[in-house]
Length: 250
Length: 165
Image (cartoon, rainbow over all chains, first blue to last red; front, side):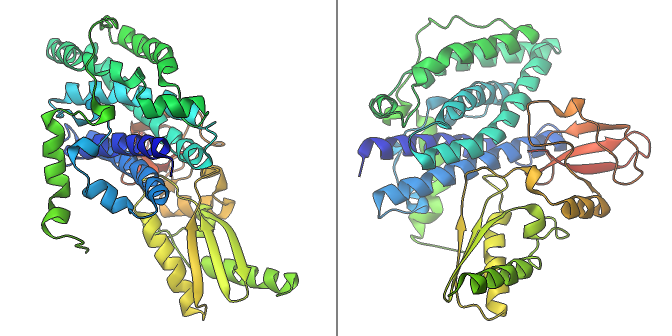
C-alpha cells in the first residue's frame, strides 16, 4: 500500500466531510428557506464527494470501510484544512469560508481531472460540476453582503479578517502532496494560489471589499493532523453513535 | 453463451429497467434518466453499471436496491450493481422521452446541451404549467440536488427546473 496515496485520499475525503458536516449545521437555520436549501444541498454534495474518496481510501487499506474511516479515527488522524473545521459563526463567516474553500476546491479538482490515478481523476471530474455551483453561489453572497448594508458589510469585513489567515494552508503542500505531485497523481497546490487570488480579488472588487495582504502570517497544521479544538467537538457529535454503540446500523 | 443470446438477454434486462423509477422523480425510469451505463451478462451472472447523478444524491443507493429487486422478481439470482464515476453523468443523457415526461410532471426539463458556466440568470426556461418563457430563477438549489427553483412571472406558479449539468 502506498502510504502517501492513502494520506492524500484521506486528506481530500476529510476536507469534504468536515466542511460538509459543518455546513449541515445550518439545516433548518438558514436565513430564508431557499438559502437553507441551498447550503444544505452544498453540504450534501460535499458529503457525497467525501464518500467517494473514503471508499477509495478503504480500498487502498484493504481492511477499512468508508464508515470506519469516517467514524472511528481520532482528531490527530484527520487531515482536513483548518478552514473546514472552524465554527460557522454568522452567515457572513459561513459565506466567507465557503467561498475561499470552494474556489480552492474548484482549481484543485480542475487539475486533478488529469491525475495519473484514474479513480482520483474520476472523482474530480464528477465533483467539479458540483463545486462550480458552490463557487458561484458563495461568490454571489460575498458580493451581496459586501456591497450590501452597513451591517452586512461590517460583518463581511470581520469575517474576512478572521478567516484570511486560514487560507495559506491550502497552498502549502504536505509531504504526501509533494510526493504525489511529483508522480503526477496529486496536484501541486502551490501552483493554485495565483488563480485563487485572482478570482477572490475579482469577486472582492465587485463586493467593494479589500483583499487582505497574502503575505501575512498564515496558520497551518490541519493537513498533518494538528487541529484546533473545533474539530474535537465535530468528531464528538459525528462519531458519538458509533463510539457508544459500535457497529450500530439502522 | 453465444453473443446473440447475450444480446437478447441484455435487451430483456434493459426492458426490465424501464420499470425501475427514480425515487425522487417517479415519472422517470433509470433508463430515461440515463444512469444505466452498461449491462454485462455472463452465464447466470448479471452486472449492471450505473452512474450517480450527483455525488451526494441519496436516491442512488435506493436505485441500486430497486434494480436488484426488479431483477430478482424476474428470476435473476446473481446480480451486481456497480457504480462508475467517469465519464461523469450529464443531463444530455436524459432521453427525449424522459424530458417530455418531466415536463408533463411539472418539472421544466434541462435547457440546452450539457453543463457550462453560464449562470441561471441567462437561461430561458419555459414554465411547465402555462408555457410562458417569462420566468425567473428564485434559487440555484431546489428540493433535490438536481433541481433549481424558478417562478413564472405570467401565471405566478413556482416550479422546479431540472438543472443542466
